[in-house]
Figure (cartoon, rainbow, N blue to C red):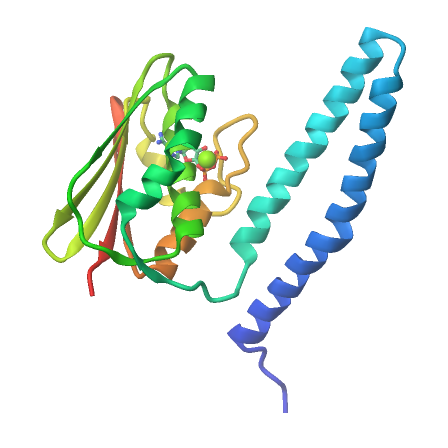
Length: 223
Ligand code: ADP
Ligand code: MG
């Protein structure tokens, strides 16, 4: 008999590959980064120091891509707990503000009274950060990003709206495909991760975009 590889076995394989990337590739990178830092401190010339800084920042970028890929490939079932989305966003807010500040963008958070829903705080924080980062990156200087939460029927709604240049219609069906990016230094893993997180929460994601901005809605079911 020919043995058919089940979806579960395939997923396990992806998980194993991810784990070995995690250990076998990231550990040596950490060692290299450490020695580069050491040599950079000892470097005699400013130009030499700059080269070491560049090598370190490129290593960090590679590491970030691996981290994003690992979280996407993770097959462990996430634990959901009854939580309030407003609390999670409030805990995360300093980080979002720091992002806004470094990019010279404006931000506001308009929470409404909402009931608890089943959430995984780590994943929801990642979701919100990925979406707000995309919003900031889509906007010219001083654009406004608005985060809203509200109750709509039997759903808790998270809405992230930016005043960016929007998503061209021909790209809409590519969103969420791993490694799809239109940015020079993008990974194209942000939205793919968001889609996976949304699925883990039995939620829905809707993206509305025009040339004056993008509005992403995530709808969480209330039990
Ligand atoms: P990355 O941000 O690394 O490019 P993402 O998966 O987060 O990867 O996004 C994929 C692509 O979707 C982006 O490169 C961009 O073209 C488009 N996109 C996502 N969010 C927005 C947004 N808010 N406004 C405009 N384009 C967006
Ligand atoms: Mg992104």
